[in-house]
Length: 235
Image (cartoon, rainbow, N blue to C red; front, side, top):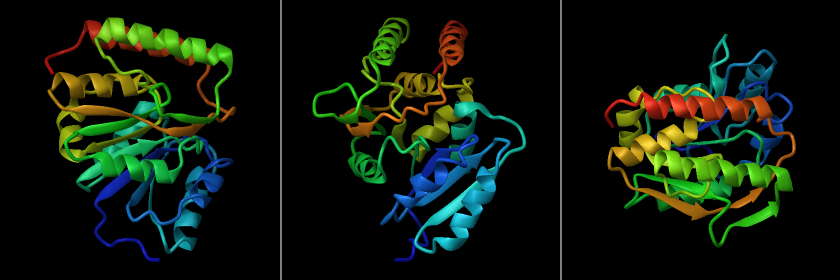
């Protein structure tokens, strides 16, 4: 099956040094009639691998964005979202924790919502492989901080499966200052402050133990979010 020549949605995949995982993730994608925008800003051969797959997979529309310097998780997503030209956009982690079928389901839920994201902590979620206990405790502590500091009532801001109407993204993207893993929180916060309707839905998800998020990243996330909240401009 050939990809749709004029896709309705684009899915951004930030891929920093993901040459060992991007192949297996793209191999799982079938029947996807949108555009895949893979953002490569690392030092390995991820971009070459993606371009080779794009040449071989006539059933997929794959665009590879190359950057010589590290953009950060948020910076990579911002670059991909800015490059998208479709009415609907989204992003997903390259580790394969969320299947493409789940992303298509989230896209289908965009109607009355301006944004929709998957959540591992709402009733109905199916976690095939859970995170370790320490990681779960860290996640709940981080979520409590987000609720208190940003006034967001979402249960899982960090799940890497989010889709939006491009018009909403275009409005808030120029105001974004986060470029790290804290990007998700700032994006949801700015969208909410701007009056957009965001829905949180259960998702099928499995933990991938090779996570790139380390302890120092958590510290950077917290300090970055404090900086965003204390020096925020108008929505």
